[in-house]
Every structure is written in structure tokens, then in C-alpha cells.
Image (cartoon, rainbow, N blue to C red; front, side, top):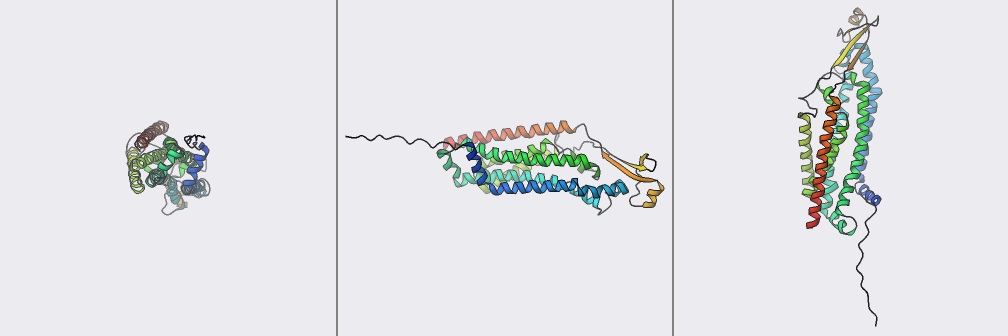
Length: 310
């Protein structure tokens, strides 16, 4: 007489970490290509501003002084406007990260049931969420870090070509590690909302609204740089005479007779840095990263409860 020994099926081994990363990249390859195109396009704009664009604006400054920078429809005026385009693109990119995290990254897989099927078979819920967050976070840090470095280099090299006003101060205080931390907060908020809502379209809408509230708060409260709390960032414009003396800009605009009358042969202009820059940047970065950590902790806690209750 023979006996059959029934052995319980062993659970499927968890996939290696590299395999999980490849899975996330494959599932969201369209979003990855869009992000890479965004970083490349924005970097191209910044490099143009560092090179050919700055050369044209610098010639206007050298010829007519600061007056040359504010001549209507002039190339220098256009340069000053384009200086802020990359800042706008970075802001839009942060919003896009929050929308992506709330919708396609998290909520869509929960809504379709794909994630719930994978959890008992191959990967734990915690590892699933960890991969969902760390893979895009790595691309966000590298991409925004590169753009922030280029932008800061652009300010250092050609901040003197900006038309004075509230915008240069706001831009100056927004360039730094906080620029990298902001989309990470968008990623964490989107993931938390996606886990809570578990429906793609509502998660998209709520993620966008939540990040809008963060953006609005940053724009109007200290230490965040906003339109109403702009610290002083002095600029200094001087005219250079034939003898090499530096005198006040005579505001001749493009009047060559006026320039000749004052013996002006060139101009200099610079923004003087503010001592508030690093204290504000470091404090803002710390606040944003702390909020990111809180959102991530809440997301993992919510996931564990959902996984435990089925």
C-alpha cells in the first residue's frame, strides 16, 4: 500500500529588487520618457540663456546700459522674460509629479486590482509601495537637481541682465535645494491621496488641489519666498566713462548724442546677494522634506491597514 504525501505549496519567492525596479519602469515608461523630455527641453532652454541669449542681452547692456534692458520689444527685454520660463516649467513639473503619483502611479493599479493580485503572489504591499516611490523619486532628484544647478549657474553668470522688480528677488530665493524638495512632496502627497481614494480620476483631481494648496502657502508665508514677503536684493548700475571712472547711469537709453555728451563708453550692473538666501533655503527645504516624510509615513500606515483588512 502506498501513501501519498501532500506537501503544501511553498509561497512564490519575492522577485529581486532589480526586477521590481524594472517592473515599475516598464509599467510607467511613457511617464519616464515624458520626464526625460521635460528635463532635456528645460536644460536646453537654460543652456541657450547661458550662451547665445545672454550674448545678445549683454550687448544691449554694454551699449545702452540698464536703459537698454528695458527698451520695449527689445531683445534684452525678451531675454529677461525668458529667464523666468524655466522657473514656470519647474513649477508645472512639480504639479505634474503630484498628478502622476495620485493617478497612474498608485490609484490606477488599486482601481484595476493589479496591485492586490500581486501582493499575495510575488511582492509584499510595503515593497510594492517602496518601489513605487523610490524609482520616480530618484529620477525627480536627478532631473530637478540638474536643472537647479543650471539655473543657479545662469543667475550667477547673468543675473545682472534681469530687469529690476519683484521677479528677480522671487526667482533668486526660489533657486536651491527647496526646488528639488518641492516635487518630492508632490510625489508623497499624490501617493497618499491615491492610496486613500483608490480611483484614478478623483485621485488626480485631489492631488492637484492638495499641491495647489502647498504652492499657495509657499507663495505667501515666511520662510517661503513670496510676492509679499520679498526681502531686499539690491542691484547696482553704473556707467563707465572714457577715463575708466564709474558714474551714475545718465539714462540716455539709445540716444548716442547723450552718451557722447557724458563720455560713456560702457556700463556695469550687478545684483548684490542677500544674507537671507541660505537661511531661507535651508529652512524651506527642511520644512518640505519633513512634510514629505510625514506624507510617506501616513501612506505606508494606510497601506498596512488596507492590506490587513483586505
